Length: 134
Image 1 (tube, one colour):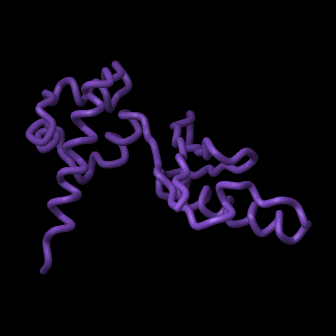
Image 2 (tube, rainbow, N blue to C red; image 1 turned 120 degrees about the vertical axis):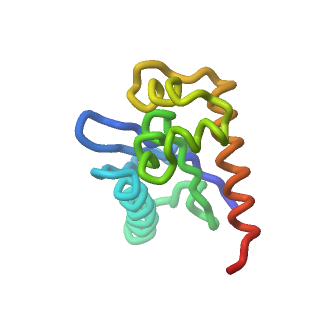
């Protein structure tokens, strides 16, 4: 299965996204969920248009694929601020709340080591949640 990397960026009034491996397709939306949906639809439209017009389908779209979405720390923290409090993120990551607030406001950018702490904590939480049955 092909892995596509979609980059989501915050613009002044919305979000935009593009896929690193596929030229000519992007997405836009008011929220991250909107931009993800827009991008996914754009990939389907591109593939269908290539087939309809007899053009070659971009190689990454010729087989099944999954999309990995990459966000900057500011966008992530803004997106999930109603789900994760700064206090909870501090407990999960070991990064103090004030620093997390700075990242969320865009006042500073986290170093790669800090980004790894956040990502590792989120993946660990995801694994724990996937192991639960109700």
